[in-house]
Amino acid sequence: MELVLAPVHFREMIWILTPLLVSLLLMEFYFDRYKDEEMGWNTAFGNSLVLIFVSLDILRVLYGRGMLEYVTLESALAISVVLIGFTLTLLTFFHILPKELAFGLSSRLPINIIAYLTIVIIYAGILIDVYTAVTAVIFAVLVGMALKIISWLIPESGEIPELGNVGEDVKE
Image (tube, rainbow, N blue to C red; front, side, top):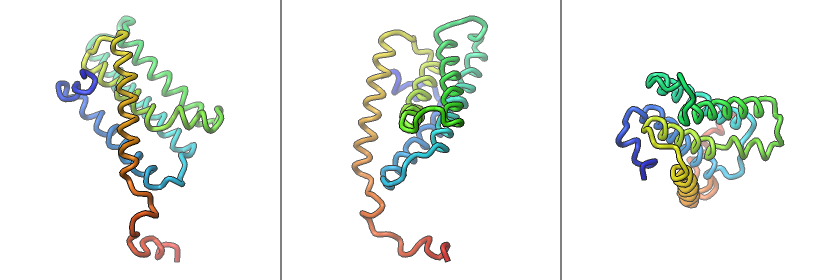
């Protein structure tokens, strides 16, 4: 529960969590509505950049607390997210991995779950242990299930009346 309620108790993390959650939901709504569209290399690349930006904020927080002077689980977590972010960015930029694997690793849900959990754990000072790891996995599964339920509620683009010929005048 601490992973879910931490933003209520540590409000300074709201400034970095809000754009993450808003973009996750909006992208989820978009791809649920337009099911024929696929994620492209540019989207995978952009998603991987999110981890770099988040890790910079996490490093800022740890630096402000004097926790980068020695190796801790928190600093190791932050450095791991930096490395994952840079690795995914390079892999997607140069199209090194097979498309399906790259898109799976750099899709919005895994990236945003990693970012959210790292932010909450660092900002709230949650102990990094087996219980936190198990809770994080359960949290990720529940978020995935919630997004799946939401996707069932979003009508596909052909299922609702369109707004006339919006966009048709642009083609002319």
